[in-house]
Amino acid sequence: RAVGGRPYSLGSASRPGVGERLGTGKSSGATPLTVDRRVLGSALAASWGDDGWFAVDVAQAGRLVVDLQFPSGLGTGQQYVLEVYDAEGNELYSFDLSGADYAGGSVRGLGTFVDAGRVFVKVSGSSSQASWGRTYSLMAALRPGVVETLGNGKSSGATPLTVDRRVLG
Image (cartoon, rainbow, N blue to C red; front, top):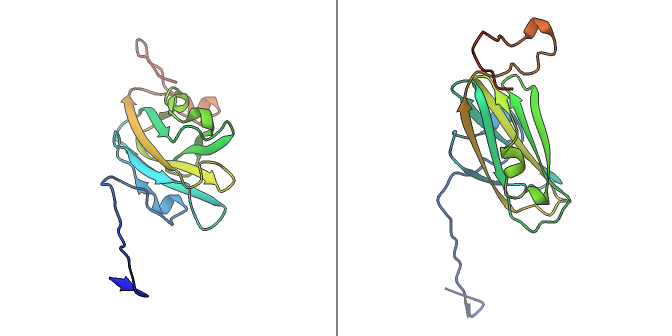
């Protein structure tokens, strides 16, 4: 088609996959994150910051392995904040990720333990960071097992330990 006497063409492309739901900004509209399935997202919004919320339904207690990967070459400064919350909104873990963490190994290797139920993973970015607008990938895996009860902080909420049974913590 010609506009102003000049021909033009317009095209678009998409790649199949699972992507982050946009515009929710809170756990109530979280993108479902199926265990062992990778989802794509980005820190990009009309304002200076963007929080991507992802809901993970955990069938049984165990070690939650969170794998956040993003492009290399973004520098050494902080690029993302990765947080894990329980169903009640209590923060279980928080990690500041620098450009050196692009391959995901620093978080994958940590002992993040959760009970059965829904947990939320939040990935935050800021327009002042080199990762702004760049695509990241996120995956959660579960290694089932008996785990330490998190956040109890006192003996009345102690994790039961029976003879000859190993507890992860």
